[in-house]
Figure 1 (cartoon, one colour):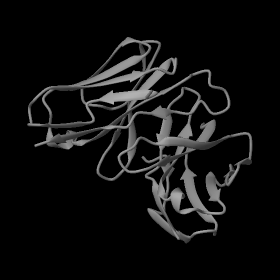
Figure 2: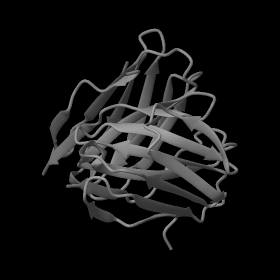
Figure 3: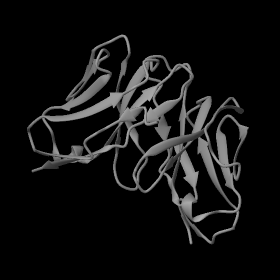
Length: 115
Length: 111
């Protein structure tokens, strides 16, 4: 039973299209994140939600819109896709009162390829 | 402005020897430092962490050392095993819960 699951795992689409990636966690965590890993392997934070409230919003084009319908779900919608959006997108969750580590639990990633 | 850096993109060691992975940071406000391990086509998984008020944390074959004055941390794996071959990410977390990651170091452990 996967703790953090993302769908789809692979997504190939044309420039200009709109697409969504969904994420669900069954760990009972209250905070969820989206990270982007580009071709240089660098993991960069995009957004974070705590109890459905947006708490971190990095410098991300407004073509990217996160939505958290409840604590267990955080979806990412991308409008007007560009070539530079090609990357692996990772969803993650953590318990904000996680004490010592409060480590992130990651999904398997969604590889987006924009042609 | 990259606040967390791993200056060695790759490291190769012999099975049974020690692997030392390094990480430098610039922001004194980080309160926790974490190491994650990533296999191809999988998400990163948590390995070990250390609070900013500690200088060492050990868990089995893995030890993390923190030198606050130098803004440097390192992960020691001993003895290294072929199954440890993966990409290792250093991350630094602030009190708002934001984790900033380094570029990653690819560790190869040769049998």
